[in-house]
Image 1: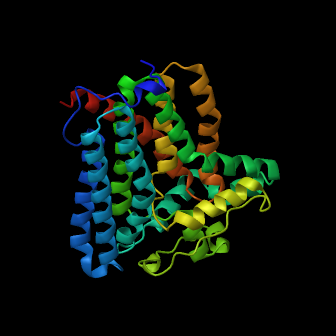
Image 2 (image 1 turned 135 degrees about the horizontal axis):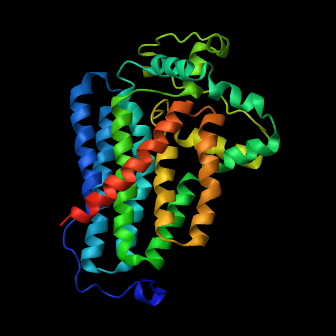
Image 3 (image 1 turned 180 degrees about the horizontal axis):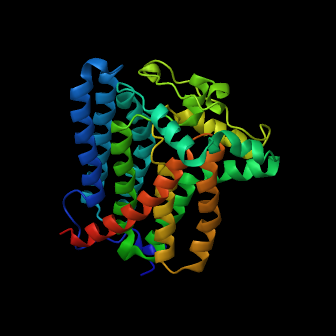
Length: 320
């Protein structure tokens, strides 16, 4: 069911009074992190600031609900989803505040990578394809992450509104599922681990256990490629703004973009699907190319993305 601009402000006569499913998922994640904060309290660097951020999240969520309660319509529903999307950028680095209190596991994952491939794909990928145009494509793919989600949201909102909340539930729940893993599984990825160890040792297959190194260190390697490229600079800006030594396994970039790709295919819209597809392929490759992930992270992201899509879609249909 496509909607017109004029329909955005029409009051919904069957408005739901309480919080929506995707908001309950976000609050569930908040409660999970509060429990983790309680367990790790003595090791947290700034627990007061973390609590403040959670209070702000609750205020914004309740404010969006109140606005919808006063004027229940499609536009206020849209902004309730948009608010939760905006907070994803805050929740991501927040995972680092907890998992850095746990022993780092990069030596385990780098070892698995070496056992599987016989080398480190992330270390060699850029060396084997050292072209400026290819670097720009990789950077473009990586920074298309949130735009791809927004495009999919907008398509469902305007073209398939009856499934819009399902889309929001599946996509946001996928994020929070990955964030739970990131909190509990402290893996930083090549851009942090390789720098801490030294690429010479990594190339020799030496993967030392760094223990709590990332409790106090967050330096990362610069991405490889054409450093004067437009998308390279855009990637650098996004990394400076929000990247932390966290969230490597599985790759949520690959996982969530897999969910987005499947949601696009579900619409049977060739325009949407063929718009998403090339960026999806670039995303799967770029996470390894720019040192963000081990290859096994990308593979796990693909597999878990497919699993989450079908599991969450089935769960949606069981919700009251």
